[in-house]
Length: 580
Ligand code: GLC
Image 1 (cartoon, rainbow, N blue to C red):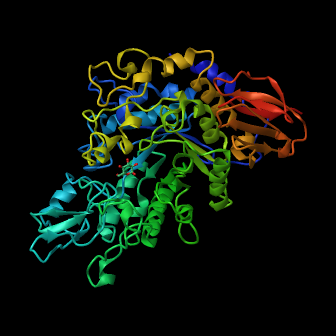
Image 2: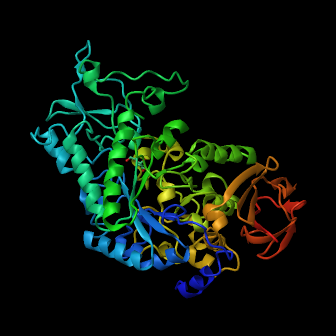
Image 3: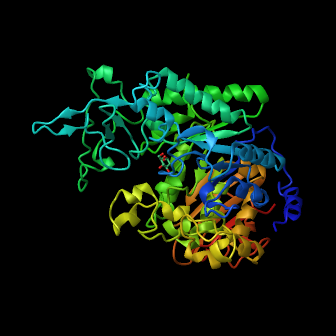
């Protein structure tokens, strides 16, 4: 089905005739593809994606020149938060397959030189985990594995939680357990009790789990919610966890996470120290077999200084990649080219000069570009993610411009949406739309399963937007993506210098150059024709050649354009190379 041979032939001429003058480690300019396992491909007909499905599509990923795949959590889990509520970190969830099948995936991917990364969930477990059940039963060993606290009785005799802390999933972050007679902390859903990282036994166990997977040849891990790992030490506050201050933001009710300023539960210095300890485990495995283990950290925080601290400083080793949410969070429907320049330059400015940047335009928590922004911007955003300096991360489906699927209230599975108890307004928060099955072809269920049911409905767009039709079309998002994935192998994109400009309110452009090989990537984010002058980039020659163009552009590869007057249709995006 996927014609690997032709693609490999193209790769050999794709380096623009230049080699990098220095060595780069495998991850430093890697293209990482995030797979939401549950929704990628189902091979056993139960309507849920599985590891065999990934194995059977490795060649598809190779064609996209993916260096590594990162799988959303595959561990055993009651699936309340779809794998982010782990009940056994050592086993693959049976819906997805077995540990043996996972090992087979690592081996098969290795044959194609694709590395396998895992999402890891260090902050909490499922309340159905053995550890938690034992802690509830006051088992001596597990007694302090979670964050427990006493409530109090108010003046009318009602039991109240220990303090005012609020969960990311709304309402109190404390849940009472009658059997134990105490409250436990959950910064996410109540089925996700927070682990107690002040207990060294817990820290050791989490390190053992990391080793367990990395020793299987896993090339790295993306750790979510690392800035929530530790809360303040209650002993420093007379044995009681202190209330968090209110933000004073208007229009929020007391159940809303943003109602409080999370000074005692988020971004604590000890959480950075914990990441550094994890990094030491990664590096110890790297030393053994010489394959760098990659640590990616996800910390949702609005403070960029807190975020880039995860790159490490001083004695703190940090992670190689603090995941950059900026293209996803800070560029919105109403944003223009100036906003984009600001968002891109901000990361380049704050990140340490000697560390690679990283870019992504979507993940399993956010609407894809076609829905969050508009379908016309799909190629432009893939150009940004793949051609800006550093590591590129693509959420499955972005390469074909998949829009979000529609999921009715009755079909809703996401706990965040269910917690709203609101059959109308759940649409504002639901994450189900970006998790509907991957659209492989125009057959029933979009080729996702041979079974009759799918765990979430297939998006309505599958008959026109699917991988197979885009593979054989004359022009498509898929073909644009594939040409970008080849271009990014050239030295100018892997290691070249970078400069950005907002040429007009609508047109964003950036230049990448390495020695005498110079490119300008230019995109019209507006709704009307713009004429721009690219000579402000200080180009030695005024003629440029088209290397890639957005699917609806009237320009083709090898067309020539003049730098001093370039007309760009609405949504048109081009990769241009300076002719010498
Ligand atoms: C991460 C995941 C999100 C999950 C949360 C709680 O932020 O991306 O999907 O709900 O962790 O585990």
